[in-house]
Image 1 (cartoon, rainbow over the protein chains, first blue to last red):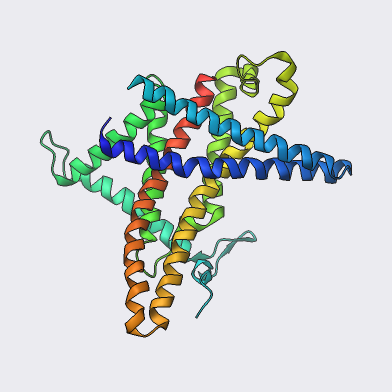
Image 2: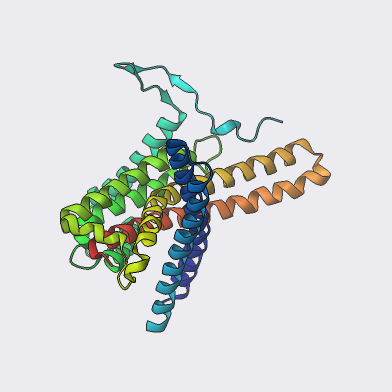
Length: 75
Length: 243
């Protein structure tokens, strides 16, 4: 792998992970809020949604980082 | 000073409507057409001027960029399936790149700074991945919601988590491109506004920053197009290989 593509990959990962985490939490919260509106059960689904969204975001970041480490091991 | 978000507003130039649907021509539509015609014109120019064994300057640029995308597609989708998706992904890359770069011309419009545009791209890609997944794997595609090696007790928790991370994909894809372009152009506008509203003695400082950030924005235009396409490849590859 040459220097330029390493730089590009690093930047793309940096740009990627930030939004990945935030958006997952937001989706979880919005889905929880919608379920609360539907079932009239404030605030339980919202609370669960935020936690699950955080878990989903962390899981995404974890998967990306696992990819990077296996790639580095291969090189 | 004007509102720094003022130049993101779209005002119709020619009012048109078809069957009650507003299809007015605005700056954004024209910018999109220009982007489309630049990509099309560039590649037509390469082909029309004759593809030769000893490539000319334009042909080298076109070939190198296409090989770059081909390598990317092959890496994430696999050599066997790559030719099917390569034209689609190359089109996305060049179109977004052209739109991003057109936005760097003062007075023009950055079409990718509209969440509607990036949202349509991302939603289209998301629906495409679902379509590919169901066409390839049938009902087994639901297995994507349960990662391998998960204990049975965890499955009720894993399914909502996986659904959230599935839905987060198109949203993060669209928000990333939109937010980066909007933020960059807003910063440029604010800095340039500072440079214009202060005396020259201090004004050169924000003006210098404007120049520097302009360079950064051009780099970001390339990087964001690259990230958008690479993630499209990753998402398509994910549904093809299914873990």
